[in-house]
Image 1 (cartoon, rainbow, N blue to C red):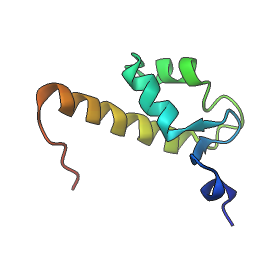
Image 2: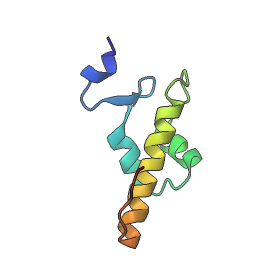
Image 3: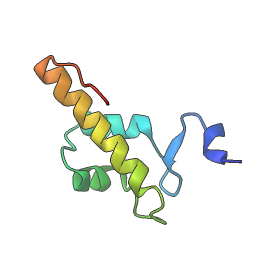
Length: 77
């Protein structure tokens, strides 16, 4: 059983207790590169197994922020 599904909010990075909301907050707070996100949240600096999921969450949040600025709708295929 994946224990992370029992946590509220669900943590992406278990070692540093970083949730999706933390990623959203960091991007809104100026983390415009993945390196800046890591510096703000310290995610992926423990065991590193969350790297792919953390990067995907970062990309999605960056896309949402760009869509809000341009007024466009982000489409996924």
